[in-house]
Length: 170
Picture 1 (spheres, one colour):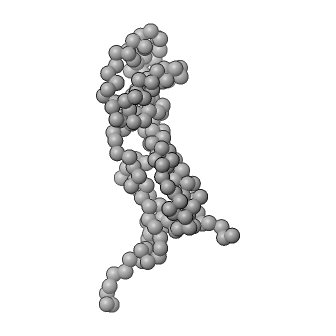
Picture 2 (cartoon, rainbow, N blue to C red):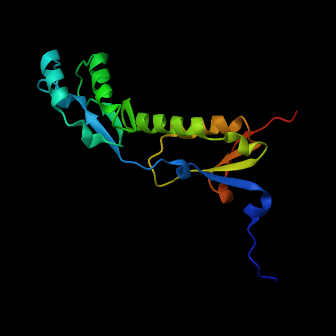
Picture 3 (tube, one colour):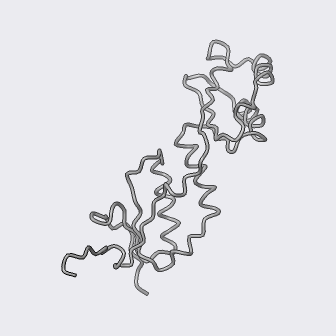
């Protein structure tokens, strides 16, 4: 057939990877620690502990939680630790920071369980520009882990991929 459409990417042996395929399902939420402070600025230990003990932590069941503060308040580390200790048995993951820190921590767990060796000596294209909020740090960590195994790594789409890594010839 003269007009047969050929999939050149498929024939090339390139493997397209979409990091969004690894994105764990589950709601991501933030807890603003300033809600637990006096006037949103001052941590008074006794009222803080009372408010933490009265909080219904069950609303965070099976959620990924980022604990942060908006203001320039000085919050001691133990305050985060106290909140994290309440969330630990309920939430899927708890971090101190914004959603970027949370997503990075979530993906670090995913990468620990991921078998990167299946890409040994393979030519890979890591897809970018997705629909999910995946931080740059996650793409970098994924690339570094793939690099230990892959023959080559490119970024983007097959029609316009940018070379990122090529294994040195032995």
